[in-house]
Length: 223
Image 1: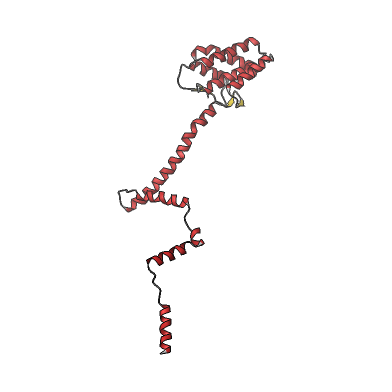
Image 2 (image 1 turned 120 degrees about the vertical axis):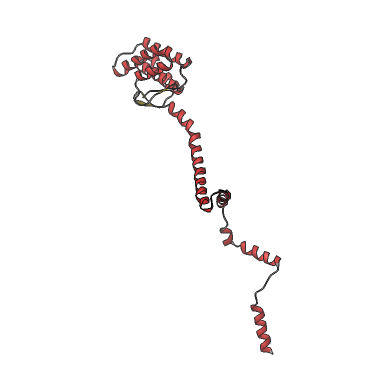
């Protein structure tokens, strides 16, 4: 009998324990609170990615199961492409405005704005350096019209090209622009002496152009 009792006791110990509902919940909470389970929990990025993917899969598209997968992939590509396009679209106006106000001008890489060029011309005139004063005031004229997007220039634009196209936009100033371009070429490329009278004429033109209104609404690009 003693052997039978001992055997029955061992059998009862081997029988799986079935906890009640409250006890089972407590065991689960204790198990999941261990460090290895906390380390395996999804991050915010995992949750956001899953939510986005669940939203894509929730889209109901007619055409059968074989069509659902490719359509979801296409939708994902469209969303990513839209984000990239929005970045470039909203960034483009600032880049365009910057490029219109700086860059190569009549053979030189010059990032100054029209005001800085005008001040340089005035300083050169105060020193009676008429060659530099004439060059700088004509550059100020070209940069000023570019900043107003009336006439744009490229690295290969010459002074005469610029004057011709600027005269198309502002026909009332066509002859004066042509004369200023000729003066610029004379002092820069033909080594001719500049004069105060030539500078004063170009300076007056620059001042008048700043107050002028264009005859055309669109810019004329000089090649």
